[in-house]
Length: 111
Image (cartoon, rainbow, N blue to C red; front, side, top):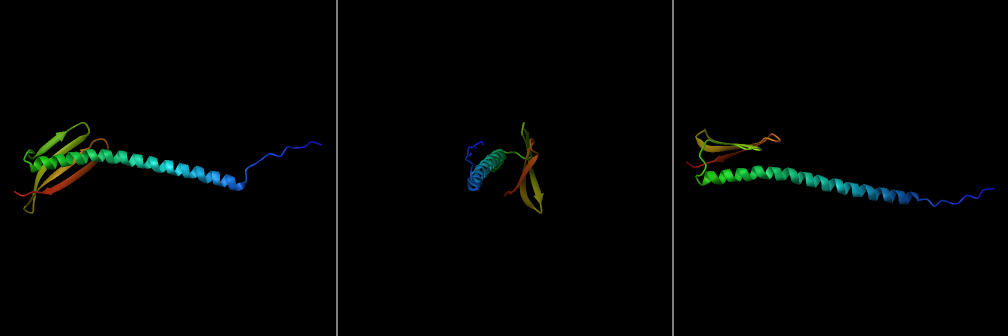
């Protein structure tokens, strides 16, 4: 008769705990990756916000002559004067050529 050696195996509790730990590590890794990708997207939008703030500053200091149009590799910038309902305003429009996102702002001006 052959004597079989007893093989030490993990209990069900140990397997469940190990699985939970692996799932938690995976969930944390996915959350970190998602945060990194969102930050990259916001950084790209930060370029548009920076350009928009520069245009507003230039206009408020009299350095920007309207109508204004500028093309670069990534951005298309347009500034025009609006007069609707006798309220003078300017429209600033920036188009990101890579992702086709358009950001527009209307600013009321005193003239």
